[in-house]
Image (cartoon, rainbow, N blue to C red; front, side, top):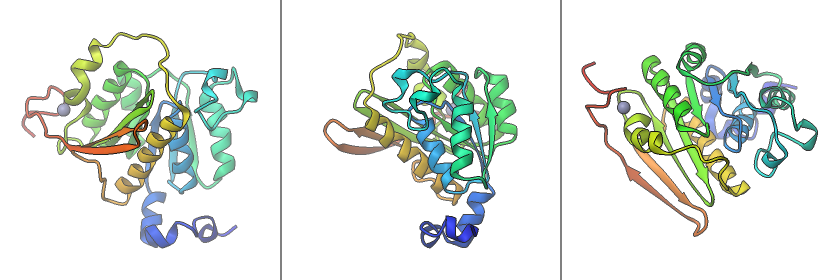
Length: 242
Ligand SMILES: [Zn+2]
């Protein structure tokens, strides 16, 4: 199959040069749950050159209502291997890297050495803030999203140009106790995941639309709003002289 045929339905939108840019972009997807699984599916399908899958969880039957890369046959398998198998079959042109390790600052830093862009689809703030710190240190664009119940939000961190996750969510995130799995509607996670994947395309094509902006989705009322957000020059992660 010619590459032009694989991407023929998106080439009119991104152009040959845009497709080359996608091909030249390596994306690290942290978290392969309801957000990361679907975002990774679009990113691999769209022909990004490398997708690095980072997760340390196995597939549970309670994941299947929203985590669209997995089936009942995958229950008990590591998410990275189940996801990688599907993504390789979707698009053999994409290099899929499996990282079946627990997220911490060192791991995030190591993964981001080989990635140009980050999808933060994690489910806890300790890991999210570790990935944020690594992304700032290495200057990688980070697309952050979260979904809970009927609600979600998405923003893009461009290090030292936009607010990072530390100043947006650091204090509130650390104060939040782990309270076990939270309720979320499958399609609500899907909407947020799709927005994150779209933003990854935008960023790879040179124009992230949610840099310095926070998109809020209220999917119970079917409303979206976007807030402009400003940097804190005193941020302990990204602030200070540069
Ligand atoms: Zn910051």
